[in-house]
Length: 244
Ligand code: ZN
Image (cartoon, rainbow, N blue to C red; front, side):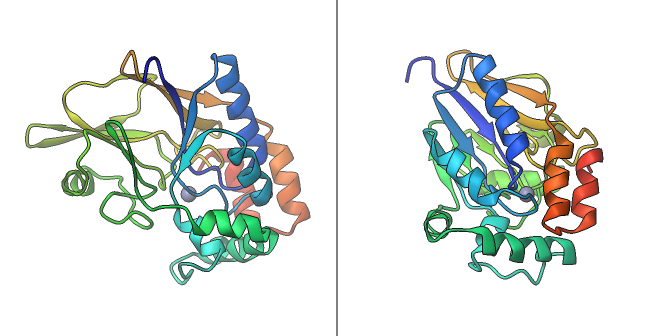
C-alpha cells in the first residue's frame, strides 16, 4: 500500500464542530488517505445529518455503532439512559431517507490489513465496553488480525497481550506497533469522556507502523448553543465542557 496514512475516528456523535476541527487538524498534518470510522457517527449531538454527509465526502470505512442503529430503530433503546434515548429519538427525526439507507448498510465488523475495526468490542460489536483488562483479554479470542480498533467508551486506551498477560495503559502520543497483539481505542471525537474536553483521534502511519494520538480544541460552545436551541437534554450539553 506504500505509505498509507489512515485517520482513526470514533464517536463523532453528531458534533460537527468537533468533526470539522479534527478534519482541519488532519489536513494540517499532511492529510490522510482514508478515514477509518469506528461508529457512532450520530446520537447526542446537534448535526447528525451533516456529520454523515461530511464523512461520506471522504474515502472511508465505517462500522455501525449502537447510536447509529438505535437512531434508525435497528436496535432498541431500552438500555439507553433517558437523556441518550431522548437524543436518539430527536436524531432519528433529523435523518433523510438517504442517511437511513447509509446507516442501515453499515457493517458491524471490518478488516483492513492488520486491523479489525468494530465499535464496541469484537465479541459484542454494538454494546460491550472494553475498559478492563479482563474484558480485553477475553476479546483477544474474538478477532484474527494482530490489532483491533474499538470506540464506544470514548476513552483513549490501549490493551496489550504480552504472553498470557493483558496490560492496560493510556494511549500514548506515539504508539509503536510491534509483535504483540493490541486493542486500541483512539478516544471520542464528539463527546470525550476521559476528563479532557478536546476532541480525540489518531492517525495510523503504515510505513512507520506507528499510531499517533492527537487532541484538538474545538468550539464547544457552538455545539452547545445548537443543542440548547434544539431542546436536547441539559446533561448532554454540559458534559461536553468537562469531557465526562
Ligand atoms: Zn459513542
